[in-house]
Length: 53
Image 1 (tube, rainbow, N blue to C red):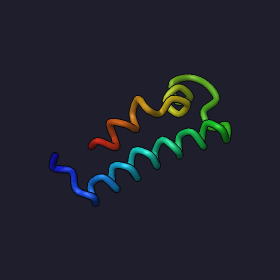
Image 2 (spheres, one colour; image 1 turned 90 degrees about the vertical axis):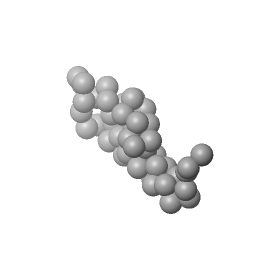
Image 3 (tube, rainbow, N blue to C red; image 1 turned 135 degrees about the vertical axis):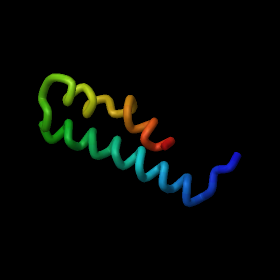
């Protein structure tokens, strides 16, 4: 209801950009196992809240 165009763009770039970076890092082979791999391979857990923030 109080969403502004700059706020929407900031959320899109923050959430989408962080998710894209995480997926690219996973594809490049960074963090091949453990929690780091889990968080990078499935970034929605943290990138969606980051975008809303």
